Image (cartoon, rainbow, N blue to C red):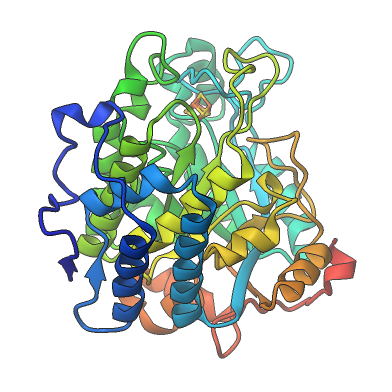
Length: 434
Ligand code: SF4
């Protein structure tokens, strides 16, 4: 790979000292943008395809408000999607299990995390997990998303005591039991438990088809006093990047992504995308990147922060497609842009992520999942076809055996057809599952 910028800096390098501030600089013309996008698109599939470098990516970010330029960027992104996955768009029929909604961090936009004395605080027992999983099996779900707060045992004595009464000393031990039981009952776990050590990920790997951690942002500015991540030590970008590195060293199929609209600026967004690209290229473990727009919630400090406009979301989805390696699937949560699904596909999205017929999105409870039937209809209306996958994409199941523990490698074919797409014993139609 090579950078298309003449003076692009390596994506792995930390942002320059000025990167935390929006910068004035080059504003490319439409002709420039057509040429830059054309270079990226024409290189897709080549052995040494060109990359969009930092200088050009930042320059593009300055002109995305121009509708004509946004159109050029979206057409390029859609062409990349078409070259890699043709007319196919994927979705994973899943369950969302918030194993514990206690968290040691306090991000100012979050309503997921509860305090231990809250009536809504809950930590699942393994039997409760099994009960939910049975409901998932009955509705044809394959992926069990274990999504939980970051290590509440560090912050709360009562939580430590509760774990002890169950014979456990950490959330990771609870996770291990939950994943084991999930496999026994008949679904495939995908764990997103915040920051995990390399040893913890290694212990979880045999019991997880894939794992994930949103990089969210590389902005250190958002960790400063008064900013959304000031009380969130696990949101330190260096920690999150280190976990991505370690997941790559362990060969774990990994999900990451960028959170849009929590106070980061355009330079920081570009840096976040370049960092994901660098991690993906060096380790080959990033199977998908989520571009997730922030939704303000009542009862949070950020309730009055306006969400990004649809145009902005579409712009950054498309720019992400131009920046990220074509092999990395691009996902947008359909419940956070339910009125703009055709626009998201037209901007290069090739995956809708996990959509559950059983459980809500506990991170964004105000945003219901679209029914699978509607998702299929809208995908088809946009000129594409919807295929169901499990937590791992087909090409990983079929062609990347070294990314799975032998136990998981043996299990995956039970949940996949010959092409690697989802297959279950009790296959259900969208209507039945919706
Ligand atoms: S780390 Fe996640 S769960 Fe914890 S407070 Fe932040 S957003 Fe909420």
